[in-house]
Length: 92
Image (cartoon, rainbow, N blue to C red; front, top):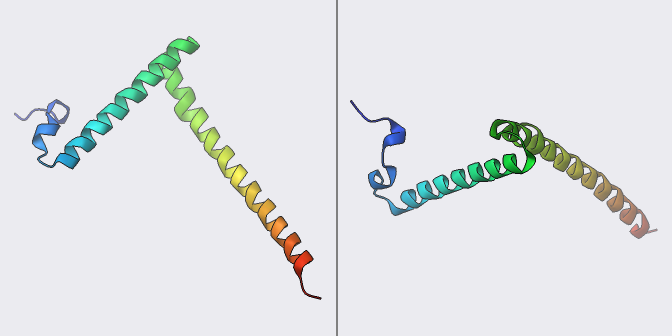
């Protein structure tokens, strides 16, 4: 029987130093995010799954929508300003 993938000691299976460092960076990032979410749940008095729901399903998509709307508004304002500048500098 082969051991499950999660039980493998991947840094020793990857001879390439870059892949080993990339794997370690991924694990470090994952545990940092988990620790952040646990601390956020403790600070807000909620459970870990509830904090995940708020952040991953509500906050991040809401922030993404807000950023898209800001970008659309900036594009509209930029077009308006370019037209105004073109109208004032047009040769007569």
